[in-house]
Image: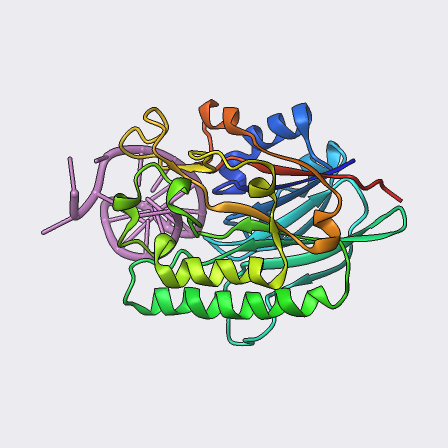
Length: 264
DNA sequence: ATGGCTGTCATGGACAGA
């Protein structure tokens, strides 16, 4: 089995001890990180390498930034979402690993938040989603197992949040945001969590403010979207909720998919 | 709550997050 996680760690320097603790206990073969908030040269590669991970990063100063950690050798690593050479925000990195009988392709993505609506931030979000969906569509032609792992900043359905009324005016829950996310399913991608459960109230983010964690006022915005060839190998998907209660937690928790694949 | 935390950069407080 190969497990692939997505986790917005909200700052790799602030989260290094927490991240290493989880990875030592229960580290999946592949971990897609978002919001590393670090330039590539500042990323603490050594402690991750010391516990068996190869490290690929696409960082930027202060905010954003994505990475892929992999116990299997990473090949063909490509930063930047195609489609706009003027987009300087570090929100996308893609790579492949060899598995028995072929390859597994993995993307770590950090989709723009988009708030407040009615501004260029929201139009940037929608433009980014359009570019991302075009890339996702093109990748289907490869007919490979592919995991699009990331912080999508989209609440797919009303039962993916505690109170839909609270999110009605938010970029994460706009009809346009949700429609763009649904396009991935229309293309043939499978939401790994939703393939495993239809339970309401499964969340991946709880705000630091207002006792959101204690009240379980969460939202589900971190998703693992599987190509048909990956979905055929799906055996499970779980939210690693307990790390939200640790000291110095990220406001997001890992979501992990298990695929019936073996290292080459 | 017109943002109640948190992280970054930088060393005070703006900016970004969701």
